[in-house]
Structures are given as structure tokens and as C-alpha cells.
Amino acid sequence: MAETPTFDLKNGKPQPFHLVRPSVWPLLGAIAAGILTSGTVMYMHNIKIGDVPVGFKGIILGFLGVLATMWVWWKDVIKEAVVEKAHSPIVKIGFRYGMALFISSEVMFFVAFFWAFFASSLFPKEAIGFVWPPANVHAIHPFELPFLMTMLLLLSGCTVTWAHHAIIEGKQQEATKALFITVVLGVLFTCFQAFEYYHATFRFSSANGGNIYSSAFYMATGFHGFHVLVGSIFLIVCLFRNMKGHFTPTSHFGFEAAAWYWHFVDVVWLFLFTAIYWWGNGLGH
Image (cartoon, rainbow, N blue to C red; front, side):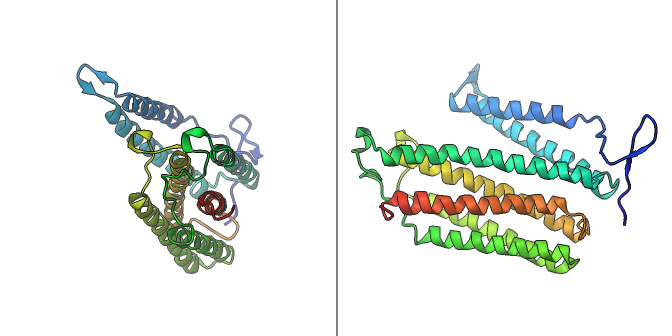
């Protein structure tokens, strides 16, 4: 089906841009994010109103508010794309630039953690005995569970590419199968990472015997794990959208954005595996 051009509300002439209708979701999303952030700060500082700790309640309320806003806002975006056909080729170019810039910002986010890790490992301080990893840290061996997790993510990168080619070729059922396998691999990765964290012998905070190694390790790998979780949810949404026939060979940017994000997650993990699990373990020295 050919895409219907949007119209200039003033003079009725067709134009290729999408004039977004006024929406309350950005305001509600900002309020929910503010509640989530404030609740997190109050929880960390154990702030109470009277004798009642309010931080954790703020976290729950803010998190549910963010999820609800995401649900209704993205539902509107899907309606614009599938029902109203408002996303013209010019609009999709803007989407691609936006997604590319978002992933670029995510790259710089992880650069900060790598910077902290290398600054601490290349120049270990007296507090950890001038050695890396610290003598009291039993680092996780890279070629045990982390290597299995690496294989899972690399395989998921292949299956999401398989799904992309299937969509381009109009093979909806094949794309659904490939997307389902990708989601399963992502969920398995998350389960294995939770298992790894549970059995790790070092802890995050200094109060529990942690140090700069454990802090850098958990911050870098933990935020990556969060990105895997978000990417898995992204792909689950794409799975259901594909089953409903939302993606066509010529119009499937929603899936493309998820695939770009997933490949970014794959690449970051390769750097994490090499730098933190292998080199940081002393095996690469």
C-alpha cells in the first residue's frame, strides 16, 4: 500500500513532513522520571518524612509511571506509523538520524566506565596494593561463563540479522521465528548474568568488602545487562508487531531501530569481555 502524504493544516497542500499533534505524554513522562530520580536519591540517603521512609515508594511509583508513559506514547507512535501512514520517507530519515545520535550518546556513556576501569587498572593505587586485580579479589575467569554469554550474544546478532533479511524478503513467518530465537537468547544471557552475579565472590560496596575493581566491574557489566534487558523488551515488541503484520519490506524502521540497538549491545559486550574479563583479569598482560 502506498504511503499517504501528510497535509499542511493551513492550506491543504501535501507535504512530506509529519506534523505531530499536541500530546500530554512528554509532560507526564518528565514528571514520572522526576519522581523516579527523587525517590532513588531519597532511598540512597535514607530520607524520611516523619518516621516513614519514602525513597523506595518513590522509586516504585516513578518506575511504574515511566513504564505507563512509554506504553501509551509508543502506542500512539505505532498508530501514526501503521494506521495513519504518517511516517513518510523524509520522516524516516529523521528517525534514523535520531536513533544514530541516541546510540552515539550510549557509546559515550560506556566510554566513561571504560575510562574509569583503565585509569584504575593501568595505575593501581596504594589502597589496593599497587596490583590489579587487587589481591583480595578472585576475578571471574573469562573462558567459563562469560565466554558462554559471549557466544549467546554473538548468535543473537546473527539471528536478528536473519530476521531483518526475512522482513526485507517479505517472509513474515521466518522473521517471527528468527525474532523469537533472538529474544530467547537475550533472556538466557540475562539469566546467566544474574547467576554470575549471585556466585561472584566480590561485592559492589566497600561496606561489604568491595573496592574500585568491583565497583568498575559491576557498573560496566551491570549497565550493559540493563541494556540487554531493554533491548530484549524492544525485540519482544517487534516480535508481536511482526506477527500483526506491521512490518513490510519497504517500511520497518521500528524493527531496524531495535536491530541497531541490539548490535550496539553486542559490540559493547565484546569490549567488556576483552577489557574487563580477559585483560582486567591479568590474562592479557
